[in-house]
Image (cartoon, rainbow, N blue to C red; front, side, top):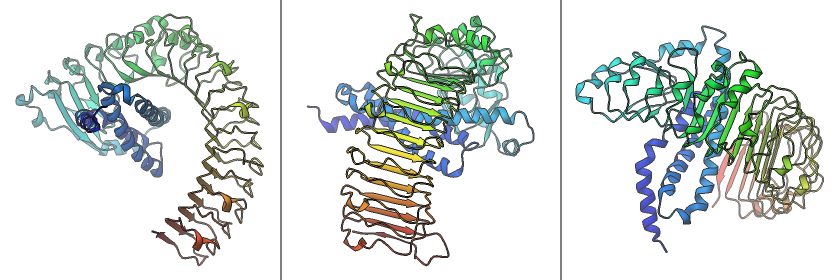
Length: 560
């Protein structure tokens, strides 16, 4: 058996060695997120910052470790968690690009004014001849600060890695000379990679963002020879690509180290027929694991997504469609037999892809703001998570009870769904937000694996159903009821119970003896539960009314 101390030491050394490579990811997210997120959301992303940073570091170390075989299960879980965090990154970036397109139609915005005010210039004294052998250079700036690079920067011919931290806007005073940095491997910044003739930097590995323009130096062929690119690549401005032949110049198939590709059309200036031809020419490497299409308006999927191309990514695990405006049914995805995650957002289809039940590897399905889809068909039994947000259908699929692998169900702002069907016993978490129904499923006792229940902004739900004794956590928020009726007292596994912003609630239920945390925030209660003194497992009690007209004293108690 391997010495655990040796493993720990190896991981510790690896974390030190690769930490600086992982560091820019979430700061980038935070900078761009400021323009589309409120303060609370941004604060939550800071929590993701630490988690993603730790995950990336450990993943990189394990990937090269001699103990990889033994740590493989851990690596899979870490990779899954990292992908979840990167999905947040993509969502923010998508919204940022939409906002950027909207802002371009107006002028004189406050943001533009702010950018002009917060402009930094790199000191020329840092780039004198004595630094001409620099390989790594960091000049880190904070949110909303633009950075102007002097012409002398382009004479650092040995430069391999440049780190501008959270910089959101880079200006190159002599951008046409950036191609002189022929040894450049990595540029760390959330700014657009905005200088011409990037195609000459053939050692480049990590520009996560490239925008195609109808200008010299920004053509599709600039990406042709950058086959050392790795990780994620976002290509924007695809409306500026006019044919399949031009798209082939990108040579995505030759970029075998890319694991994720995002293809984005920023406006609808291109016809659907041309977009379809362009996408046909953007076949990625067969090693690709994650693919996203943003604002694609074509009427069909390319042959390489239909299993008709020998070099197509047959092992694709995650697929995302955002803003597909073509009407009619969704395209068939039967070729992706290894697909594990499908995310649909803002698509105009009237039905999900055909033969969904044959996607036997699919574990995660997320559907958001697809208003024309009126119902869900039979889903694959392999599903472990279903998330539905802001959709118009009347009911969940009829075979929900047969989804014996399903662990998590999230329904948000689906006003037409009036009730839940019979749910599978495998469920561990149910979240319902903004529903219109009068009650949850009448009897949930058979859900013996259920551990967490969250009910938010369901104004018409006046009481809880009979709940399973397996529950460990309940969160109730923004309800209209004056009391919480149900069998809470008999939930012998319940450890955490929170009630938030239920302003009509005047009395609290009896609590189970197993409870460890109890929180009541902005409710109208005038007294604690009658059996509170008998809850001997209670470790944390937090009561905060937040309303002047009630005399309950706000307090937090740590009980030992």
